[in-house]
Length: 423
Ligand code: AMP
Ligand code: GLY
Image 1 (tube, rainbow, N blue to C red):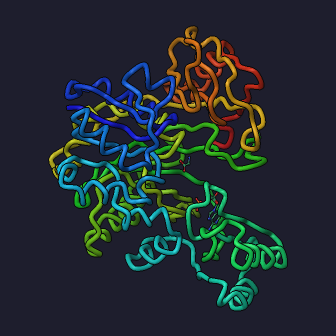
Image 2 (cartoon, protein in one colour):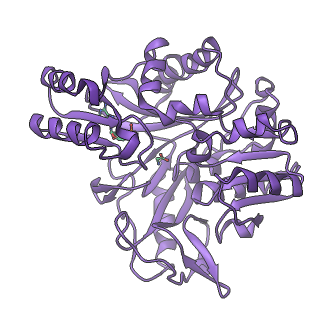
Image 3 (tube, rainbow, N blue to C red):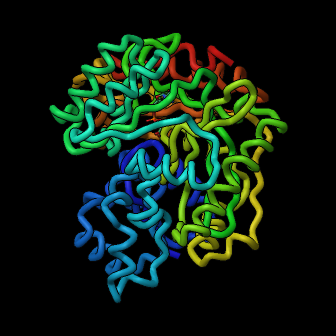
């Protein structure tokens, strides 16, 4: 089978790396891909939201399965585009249609879904410019800190957590009346603050059945000790040591099953990944958010721990036959440490030559923001390379990654030296 992966990050390289190992694969394409995906497939330089170009390359290359990496094409309706086109409608797309992608694309949609299906989550109310004053009154009823969320996609920046009531009111005004996050904040969800430790769980579903993928914990802040600005993610570990069997059974019964059942009850078709952003509060799971795709860098630890033929599972999901499949994991732990460009998540430079990648031993270098220039691998983004390793536990795995990182360098390279510090 010929397969196309949409996206250009570490997540897409990890998925490409795994699928390239499948005996069911004929040719693998990645659009647009990066210098790492080039090692396992053919890159095609198109933007994943340019649906007409996408159609052309899918037909030209006899693609039979499309895996959508990032949320943007899903929220913009790439799956719907395929279903509506006579030449594309029989091609499997892994990633939900536009309506279901609102689980990620609209915080209010997700909250309403969770409340409708009794899925544990923080109490909330949503507000628009028209009822801004009621928003102030609602804030006054809460105890700090205050959690304000732009309803729509805001590139990971749309959530504000504030300790001061006046500041919370000011930010609410900024978001609703002054469009702080553009159209994404024309509606704001204000929710109860949950105090606990976060983790992420993932399933692949065909809308009726699902397989669990390994769980993971990511490190979002730029600075050590979880300080400083939010990033796309600076590292991850899998499995999460505190998510024992008892806790994972609660996640399955209280969160995962009701979510899949809820999709069916609401008549929402769903083929693809669901990412459950969870928080453990006094040993109970609560959902912080849904994403309609895999996480990045979580994928760089989740996928390496999958033992089964991943393409076989994706094909089954596309045919809505996932109920006939099971998934096996490796027992070892995996960790990943993200090497980022100096300055990220603020402004940074691109085009810096990366050296030492050929010296990496017993780790996998998943490329995130890289490109090739004059036969050299150069930086091409904020997050540049994820160094993934296995170990008997996450500490062993981390040791291995940090050892290999010593061999890699590029101008102003930065990374967190304390991944897993809180476990
Ligand atoms: P989200 O984009 O919804 O995942 O939110 C981004 C981050 O904000 C989460 O990963 C949490 O660290 C934090 N957060 C979101 N909602 C809450 C909440 N209700 N209570 C505490 N922290 C939250
Ligand atoms: N690492 C968090 C995310 O992919 O959204």
